[in-house]
Image 1 (spheres, rainbow, N blue to C red):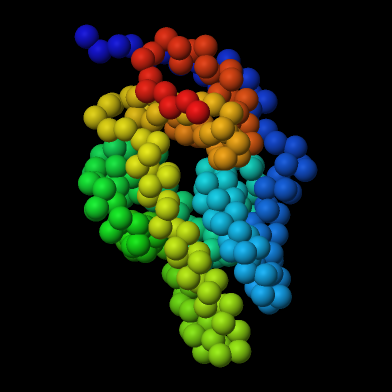
Image 2 (image 1 turned 180 degrees about the vertical axis):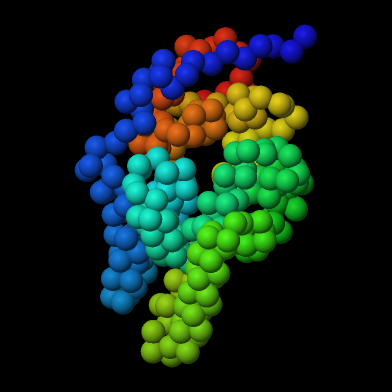
Length: 267
C-alpha cells in the first residue's frame, strides 16, 4: 500500500516565508551585476584569479539564485520588471532568461518524465552526462524556443540574437580586447556543471511524489559551500518561497519530513 503523503500548507508553515525586505530584493538583483563588473575590472587589470573567481560566483548567483527567483516570480516584482531583469541578468552569462523560465517551469511540472528536458540527465549514464554538459544550455534554448508561447518566444529570439552579437564582437575585437572572448569561454565552461549539480546529484527517479524525487541535504559544511542553497527538496515542495527563505523553510518543515523515509546526505 502506497504511503499517504500529508504536508502542511504554506499558510501553516508561515506566510512570512513568501516575503522579502526591500533590501533583500535589491541585494538579490545587484549581486550578478557586481560579479560581472568584477570580472571585467579584474580582467582589464590582468588580475586573472580574481576575474575567474568573479565568473564562478556569477554563475552561482544567477542560475541557482537570482535568475531562479525571477523564473518563479518570488521577488514579487511587476511582470514587466520581472521579465526585464530575468532577461538582462541571464544575458550577463550569455544565456536566455526566458528559455530558462520555460524549461524550468516544465521541469517542476513534469519531473521525472521524459518530457522534462531540464531533468533529462537524471536518466543518463555518467559518460552521457559528460557529453550532455557541453550542450546543455543550447539544448534547453532550442527546446524552449520550440515549446514556448508567442510572448516568451519573442524574448527568447531577442536573447538568442544578443548572444550571437556578443560572440561576433568578441571575435572581431579579440586582438585588442581578448578578455571579451575569455569571458564567453568561462561562462560556457561554468554552464557545464549545471546538469551535474542541479539535476544529477540532487534528484531521484522512479517516485511519483515530489517528496521522494529529491534528496535531503543537511549539515553546516554543505550549507556553507552552497550558501544555504542546499534545500532542493524544500524548493520542489514549495516553489513559491524565495531562496533567501529556504533555510527557514527547511527548519519549519523538518518535523513533518521526519515522518517519511527520505534519502539524506549530511556533511
